[in-house]
Length: 617
Image (cartoon, rainbow, N blue to C red; front, top):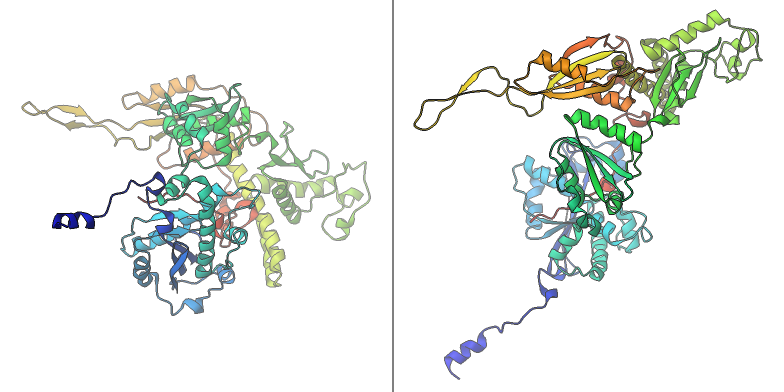
């Protein structure tokens, strides 16, 4: 045998691989399943524990676990949830000392996490703060995979606890980093086993499967063709011309295109796209006009795939009835009856909270019968409890009772201080008696009233103006004008060109309703442009109540525009002012949040957040 023949026999024989062997097989991928415990879900919160498990081909190669000193106190709620206390992390290393070892442990692997944006986001943020380079990891999100692979009949949700129970994980998730990471390993293996039936056998196929676009989305991409790039409103319609969905954007074409990409993951929107056959654009002059038109079109067409603003007529109001002994009544319609209304409210529960706050501060009767001095009734239990002065049996005259009604009307429309003094004194008394639950109930009632009254007083102040013309610089426009800027051409005398002035958005608001909007170019004469805009503006006839010509949402959109930096009032017919001692003056002090609770909500487990999977390449 010659030397050449020996050399040829030693060479590996090339073999044509199959399509299944292309890419990196999942059995050869080294995964690091990571889980974190933190002091909260906000970006400013800190990591308290890191747990990670390294696996390949179903075999555990190593584990990483350490407590982390967050350099700050751990909230009691978090300590109860995770079992990690300030004492436990007092001697633990800070995250700056943990990161080098963790990055070495994960080097050359694929990161896996349940709700990966949360865990990876915390780790990436920590690296940026401490000047560590974040590697370009491929990332797999088991929560997102579970939503793709499992049906609602199999699991009601995609939480780690539910999936661990479904796949019979050997470790139960208990809100500790290493235990949750071990449970996630079993969930990952169960999902990979299910992925085989989808033809997913490699890391590359897994990345494509995670970002898969529904076929109906791909087939409807042509609907975005030909749309303008200007701000406006878009309407998705079906074959019968029924409006399915209404949206707004500063760039119509760019926004509509996103509905046909992997970034759109909402199930109901995917269903809507499957029914849509056309997209109708409505070009608007400004973003404010687009926002207002969207609200009006949603209220007009009530598209089934829009969730908010569809039924403004269903809003609830609190009304002082018109009778000798007025009472508070919950109504759905604002009539032209020259009485006082408070609202609008989004739910019956909040109405009842605000009504109770008024009843506690002012002895207004709570019975529902119609009373008059000639038609009296027997007293109820509230009179015997001292909660009512008994006008039903003649214990209080119409003139004396009207004092309480006037005080309640003043609290609703202008001066909230008497109500605030009464309820805060009651809250302080209950807190001093350590009756904190009762104090919290009164606090929520006060917050519900203040929040609604502050909103209504802001809206009513603008709705009371017959006409307001205002201007604001266009966002992202050029610098202010006025001068000449030298320029030049090669080989010739220097040219002089004017500096482009700032474009201005100009709006006409009548009784809180947007009547006209336009963009004034730099070379326009302001007075001529404003006069033309006012002359062509919508004629608005006011109606009754705090929202006489527009919905509360529309007037709030206009108010946000007017309160932005750079706004200049141009013309004002009427008075635009808030009451000095109104609810808005104490709104920021109370910090009421949605549903009558404080904005400082307890730590919400971030597993409920919708993950966004984007494998790093």
